[in-house]
Length: 145
Image (cartoon, rainbow, N blue to C red; front, side, top):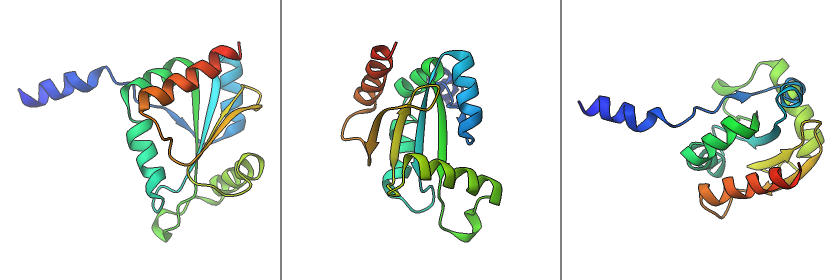
């Protein structure tokens, strides 16, 4: 019974679908009239990055926003040997970093138009609740229409 209730509690939370290729994300965003949220992270070494994915992107309110308005792209830069990315993915991540995170900040999150124009960038873990962060992102999207 407890598992059934737990399942019901999480049934309404959308699971964010992450993309790893910005060009593919742009194509989808243009077709679906969405914006792109590009997140630079270090999944196996960066504490604030791990918190960002768990606390912000894992929040129900942000999941609903991503599900309705965003194409989510993750450019991960793990350090541990066992977590290294395939060479092709590393090349894609390096190209995204060259264009949008040349200073190598982590976490670093960029809201883009479907064609890749920067609308806003956040340096570090947001100093706000998931609700406030989602509201800020939604407001920027609404003002871009």
